[in-house]
Image 1 (spheres, rainbow, N blue to C red):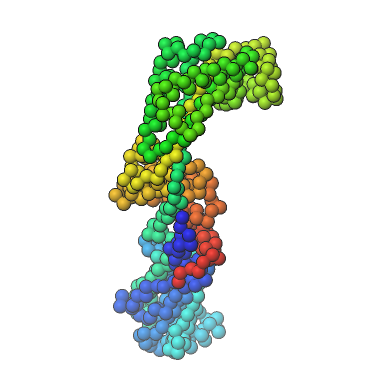
Image 2: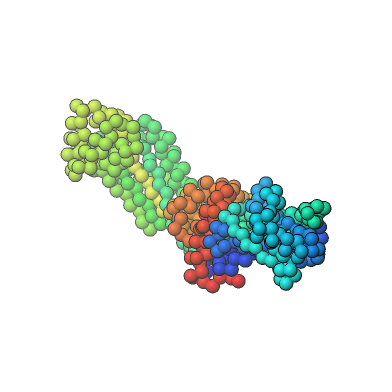
Amino acid sequence: MKPLQYYKKHFFIIGCLGMFPLLTFAQETLSSDGGLYWDYSGSRVERRMDGNKLDIEFSIALVEKLKSQQMMCISPRFVSADGTQSAELKPICISGQRRYKIIKRRKTLHNLKSDQLYREVYSVKELKERPLTFKSSFPFERWMADGYLVVDEKLYGCAECGVNENKGVAFQANIPLFGEKDYTYDFIEPERVLVKCYKDSFDCKVVFPVAQYDLCKTFANNSQELASLGRFVSESLTIKGAELKDIHIKGYASPEGDFDYNKSLAQQRTQTLSDYISSQYPVLKKAPIYRAEGIGEDWEGLKAAVGSSTLANKGEILSVIEHNQRDTEREAAIRALDEGRSYHVLLKEFYPSLRRTTFSLSFDVRPYTIEELPEIFERKPECLSQHEMYQLAELYASQGKTPLHVYKRAYGQFPGDAVATLNYANALLKYRKDADSALRVLESVKNDSRALFPMAIAHNIKGDWRKAEELLKKASEGGASRQRLPK
C-alpha cells in the first residue's frame, strides 16, 4: 500500500492551482516594442483564494513624454487566447498639463460637449511622480487563465486633432489550471498474500431411477454429466501451485415425499457418487478433509430458483416457504395453492434441478513468479491474489500493453475492495478516457480520500472544471491536516 507519499504530487499540483493561501499568479509581461506608447509592465492579475474572481491591477507608467496640449486615451480589454471572449476594463485618459487645466475648468462650468469622449482624466503630472494603478474584478471563467491584456492607445493633439492610434499586448496571464498535463494515475499496490485459498464447485445432475441409489451411467444424461464431473476434477487437480486441502460432497433431494426418506436417499446417492469419483481420482481421498453428506430436501435451492423466475405467484410461494418451518408443512401448503397447479409446475420445471450433488474443492495456492502470471491469468485468474494482478498489470504496462482488462478482472474478483475499485477507475481514465464509467465505479468509494483525485480527473474530462477544482480543494484540505505539503 502507498502511505503518506500517496498524495504528494497531487498536493503540488493542487497548490499550483491556487487552492492554497498564496494566489498571486505570474504574468508574461510584454515590452512596449510592439508600438505601445507607455509602460504597463507593473500590471498584475490574481485569482482569488475562493477561485470565483479574477482581480486585475492595471498599471500605467510614463515612457514617452506628453506635450502640454496632448491627451492619451487608453482602453484596456482582457481577451481570451483565441480572441473570442473579452472583459472590458474602465477607459482612462491622461492629459498634458495645459490641456488638463482646460478640461478641469470646462467640467466645473459644465461646458463639455456631448461628443467629447472624456472619461476619467488624469494629469500627466501624476504619472511623472509614480505609476497610476487601477483595479478591476470579474467573475472567473476558464478562458481567463490564458488571457491577455490588450491596450488601445489614442493620442490626441489640440482640439482632438491629429489622432495617433497604437494597439498592443500589455501582458499575458499564465494562471495555472488543472488540465490533462496534470493528470496522474496512482495505481495502489495491494498487500502481498503468502498463501491464497482457491475454491471451486460443480453441480452434478446425475439422475437415479426412482427410489434407487445405484449408479447407472447409461441412464438419462448421466454419461455426459459424469464426463463433465471428470473434467472439473481433472482440471482442478492440475492447477499449477495448488495443494488440495478440502473436499466436500453434498447431495440434495427435491422437496416432495417423506423428509426422512429423502434425506436417507440423498445420503446414499451422495456416497455412490463419492465412491465413483474417488475411484477415478484416488488422490482425492488423500485430502486432509474429505466429507460426503446427504443434505436432504433443497429448500434454499428452490427459493433461489423461484425468486429469479417469472412465475406470477412467486411471492406467494416464497411466503409459504418462509412462514412454514417444518418441511411437511411447506410441502402441504404448496400442494394446496391454486388447486395444485403451482405444485405441478414446480414438480415439472423446478424440482429436477434440485436433485443434484455438489462437489466443492478448496486448495492452498502458493505465490506465483512474475513469469508465471500471464499463463495463470489466462487459465485460472481465480488463483491470483490482487497483488499478483497488480504485478501483472505493471508488467503489461512496462511492455507497452494496456492492463485495463487485468484491473477490470481484479475489480470483479474482489468486490467491495477499495484498492481494486480505485485501480480499475484509474485504468478506465488512463487507458480509455472513460470518465462516466470511472465515476460509476468510484461511487462506492467516493468518501475515500484517495478517490478525490481520479474523480477530479473524470469531471475535468467531462468539462466540469468547477467540480474538478472543488474536489481538488477538498483533497488538499484533507491532506494538509495529515502531512506537510511540499512547497
